[in-house]
Image (cartoon, rainbow, N blue to C red):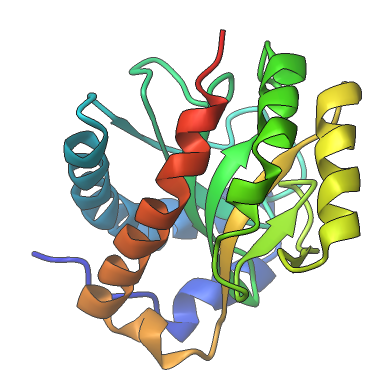
Length: 206
C-alpha cells in the first residue's frame, strides 16, 4: 500500500491530551505513513547521493510527562542514529507540515559545519524564495530565506553557540490540498531534498 498523504485527523492528534494517549495515536496513524513515504525518500536520496541513507522515525522516548508537539521522520547516512549528523526531515506540527535539511545542537562538529556554511552562503541564497529557515527544531517559528541579515546571524549563532541550530526547507499549511495527495507530496519532498543536496554536501566536513 502506498503513502496516501496526511489527513485532518493526523493534525488533530496534537490536540489530544496526555503523553500515552497522543503517542498511541502517533504510533497508530502517523508513523505507518512515515514508514511508507520515508522508505521511498531514503531510497531516492541513496541513489542521488551514491551513498546509503537510512530511515529513522522519531520515538520521543525521552518524554515522560509532556506529549510531543510535533513528530517527524529523519533520513541520515548513519544507520544507528541521526541527531549527531546532518539529516533530512519530514514531519508535522498541529498546523503545518515541514520538510527540512536539519542541523541540530547535538552535532559534534558544529563550528566546522557552521563555518563551511558561512563560506558557502551564496549557495544557500540560490534556493527558491518560498524556502524558510528555522533556528530551533522545537519551535514552529521560521523566516524567509530571502532575509539575508537573519540568515547571516542565524549561521553565526549556529556556529558559535552550544544550542544553536540551523534548518532549511519548506512549510505547508495543514489545509494545503497537496498534503492529502500522497503521490504529489512525495514528489515535492523529493524535489525539495534535491534542491537542498548541494547544501547538505557542504555540511559533510570533519
